[in-house]
Image (cartoon, rainbow, N blue to C red; front, side):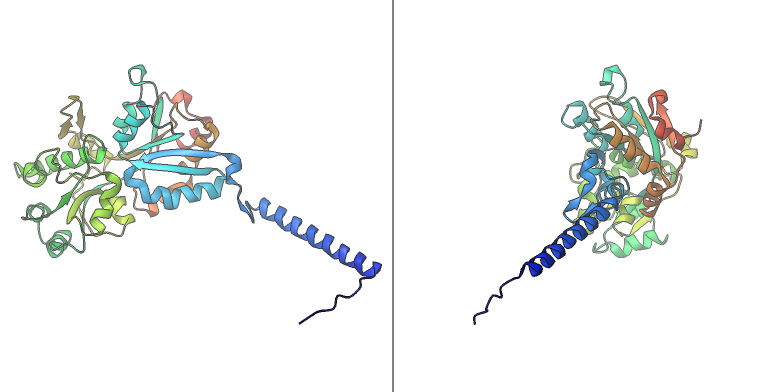
Length: 344
């Protein structure tokens, strides 16, 4: 089929030119309006403010990557780059110059202290607690022990007797790499005294470094969810975040209550390599801006977001426990923008 092209008069050409110019102007106006609202048709403008690099405790992977990170970018315009591992392992990477984060989030204040002072490289001068959690026993609904674990969750069986059943596959983290691995051992020592069960720790955990139970923190919930493990020692926020069933433990042993720190301190863990002793204490997540930060403004913006009402709402919605933020270390160097969240 053939189409005959009509000759165009000067008036027709002038009309078409005016229409084209009007369309271009409309497209430009729409683009400017979208940019003012925080985005353009071709991509996110967050890169204009730079990237914020965040190293964080591996128990927060899903929370940080799917909730905090995207919400931070949307609220501030900064792009976000995160990595989660055991807090102790991350601190070692900072010391080894393998990572240079703008923000460091740990599951233990002891890890922050290991980066403080001239003997430790002065990587951290201050840190703040911003939320807390509790130890629980998470279990797989696919486990052949699921009925007994559910009975323990309902209070009809003792959780420790169920964990002692032959063939039970238990998961936990390495105490040399992750504070939760230490908290697991301290929890079990407290349980021995609380339930009057001498030797309970060895019965359930074996040795402190029992390789058959130890897995990377960032993999543990996935292994439980897939049925590779029957049960494991977790933070409350981890199992809630993944919708996994769990057994609640008494406050006297679950390391959730700061007012019980003197009781928790009756149990401890000593690193066999360094002889460093860690006494029991309530579990609190900490945040700091280490000396490695290359984006100071972005780091302050991230800490500000996490401490803000919006950030705290996200944390509470993910199973973390509310706490009053507190500062430690050289508080005189804490950015002024963050001082509003702390009471003297």
